[in-house]
Image (tube, rainbow, N blue to C red; front, side):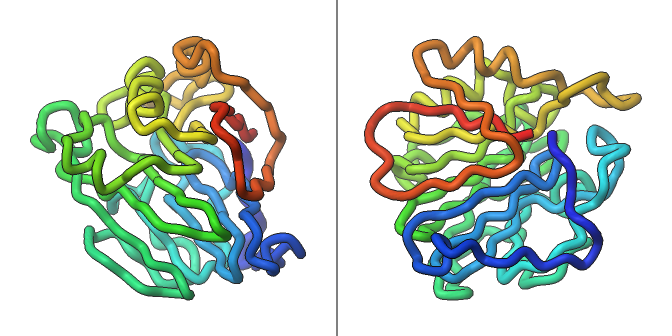
Length: 234
């Protein structure tokens, strides 16, 4: 999914993001996104070019906060500069209140891949939830802590540690997210030994939602309204 920026590059904050009204979200490939808004830059899931991310330029960029699903190399590699968070807990950084929630990374209670961290924070006037690296069902407590996000980032490619398209669609409906950004899927022929598929099963399972193929970046300004929109970033 997408292409990363050149090594060491710092993205300038868009004028909209500098004013604190909304966020601009840019795909850096695989499940890595740069989220800019409210005067802060948040990078999620930087990766090494291994596994299903093989062949992609690594996101060697600068951010205020880096949120990783785990320390697996394809979703929590320390290749970018910024305050790196991977453990569950409450954090106050860059003017943001960030909550990390422990959850099984796989469908067998974490016995295969251990736990992942789900992330929830508010940025640019929008509530954002990041479920980029899990295949486990949400517990009632998870649903309470995640609330109803304005923006949901969720893995959809399937395999041992990522939701299938159908599973991801059920979670998106369960959380009643207004904007859904699918990540962790393959846009072409999967690399060798990659067990993740394309975004299409997720889009099919999200029947009734609007689908926008927004290119590399999308800007979201509150209020978003109640209609569900899937933003597919390349």
